[in-house]
Amino acid sequence: MTKTSKKILDKIEKEHIKPRPKWQFVAMHILMFVLFGLTIFLGALAVSVILVKVMASDWSVIPRLPGGPLLVLPYLWILLFGIMILVASFLFEQTEKGYKHNLWIVAIASIGLSIILGSLLFAVRVGEGVEDGLREHFKPYKQYVEMREKAWHAPEHGVLPGRVIEIEKDIMILLDDLKGLKWDVDITDAKMPMRPIKIDQIIIVVGKKTGEGEFDADGVRPGNVLKEKLKNKKAPL
Image 1: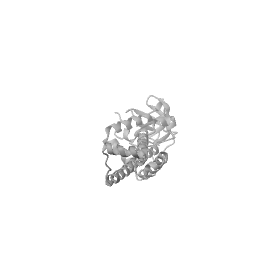
Image 2: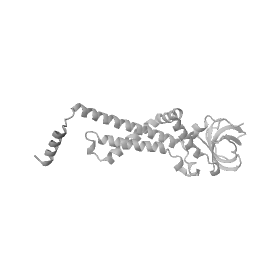
Image 3: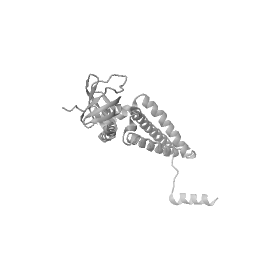
């Protein structure tokens, strides 16, 4: 008998260690796989919401914003995705044969699974439902989203978001911006969307500020990324 074997036997005898029943190992093994699958699914949800955020953002406008992409990236969801990948990798490592696999390979596989599943969830609009549900029922998240949306209000830098409240002869659009102010927007030379602009539609105007409450538009774009902040605002009297 080797010294190592003797030490193990002595420890078992001294501490009265008893072997666990096989069903406990099986149950633990199943639990690990269930938790692994759950973390992959949560990671996929994060991916689907990230895609919603990315697709809703107008990346031709973002470079004009102070800070550019750094201000509009969905950091909270990216962080959640990263945490889920780390947890999934750890859980897989705890399974019966998981320890035999390189942790980096497991992490990459977990990322791949989450991205594939997340893309499918995005395609069937699950990500949009998750985002809308959190906005409606979880006040801290709604406040977080509204804080992030304020980054899009940068008239001094040529970006003016708002809700259309009046259109006069296709020349002037009155907007109720994120701060509840009225703006007269000259769209004479602006590049307009293919679909006609409608009253109450949320848009983002690109151009330059010409005066207090006055803006000269180069282009008008849909403002889907701002739907929560503006959808219930009232036009000032």
